[in-house]
Image (cartoon, rainbow, N blue to C red; front, side, top):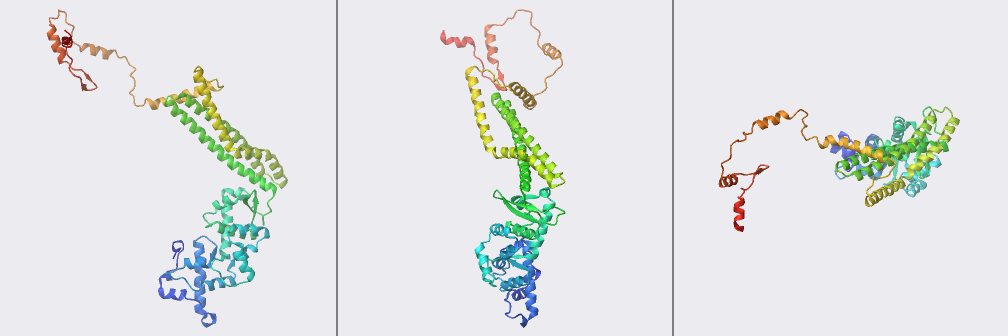
Length: 450
C-alpha cells in the first residue's frame, strides 16, 4: 500500500477472511442481503473519512483511494459504489459543485487555485453523469467544515489576529500544520466564504484574505481603506526586517575593521568604518519612517469609528509612500554603496600617490578615535600570552649577579700566546641550545698567507 505510513488501518486489516469480503464488489441489489451491504458500506465510509483526517486533507478521488487501500497487490472493488452512496447521502460533493455553491466572485478564483481542470469536472457535471471517474475529486463536507473552523481558530490565536487582511502566502505558512496542501487550504477558505467569515480578493496580482472581526456576524467587502491599512502593515514588516538587517551589517563592518586594524591595515579599516557610518545613517532614516508607520497604525487601532479610521489612514499615506519607496529601491541603494566604495578607494590611492597626506573627510577625527578604541580593545588579545612586566626595583637581582662573579686579579698575567690559543680552541659557543664549531687560531688562519 503506497500511503500506509500516512494512515492508521483497523485491526481487522490483517484478517484475510474478513478483508476478502470487504475487498469484494457490492451486490447489484442491496435487498439481497442488507446486513452485508450496510456492513461493508459503513466500513469503507468510515475508513475513507479517517484516511483523510490522518493525511490532513478534505478531498478524495477514486484513483487515490485505490492506491491507499491496496492490500497484497489488490485494490477494493466496491470503492466506486461507496463514493456514489456517500454523494447521494450528501456526505461528499464534487469540487465543481462545492465551488459553484459559493458566490460567483469566488468561482473563478477557486477554479484557478484548486489546480483542477475546469473542463474535466464541468463536462461530467453538465452531462449529469453518475459514473465516478478515477481522477474526479470529491469534498468530504464533514471534514471541510472542521478544517474551516480550525483555520479560523488558528488565525484568531496568531500574530495576524490584529490584521483584518492577511496575504495568501502568510496564510499558507500559518496553516501548514492543519492543511496538507494548498488545495486543502482553498477548500477551507471556500467553506469560510460560504459562511460569510472571509472574503478573498486580488490586489496587484497578490491574493489577500479578509477575515471577519470578532463580534461581527459576517465579513464586509474589501475596501480601499482596508487595502491601505494592509499596505501599511506590510511596510512595517518589511522596514523592520530591513532595519534589523542593516544593524547586523553595521556590526559586521565594525568587526572587519577590528580585524584589519590588528593586521596593520589601517587604510582598509578606515574604509570599513566609513561603510559602517553609511549603513547606520540609512538604518536611522528607515527607522524614522518605521516609527511613523507604527504611530499611524496605533492611531488606527485606537480609532472608535470608521470616520476616525479614515482620517488616521489618510494621515499615514505620506509615510506609507516614503517607506515603500525605500523598500523597493533596495537594489539601487546597493549599487550606490558599491560606487561609493570605489570612490573611497580611488581617493585613498590619489592621496597616497600625491603626498601621503591624511584624508580630509569631515569625520576623519571621529574615525581615528574609533580606530584607537578598536586598537585598545585589541591590545589585551594580542599580548595576553606574555608575562607581566615587574614593577619593583631590580637592583637586588643585579647585586646578586655581580657578587657571584670572581674577583679581578691584581697581579700581572703570566700567560703565553700559545696557552691563550689552546684555551680559545677549547671554548664553544651555544645559541638556543645548539653547540657551535670550535674557533681556530687567528695565527693559523694567517699561516697560508705567510
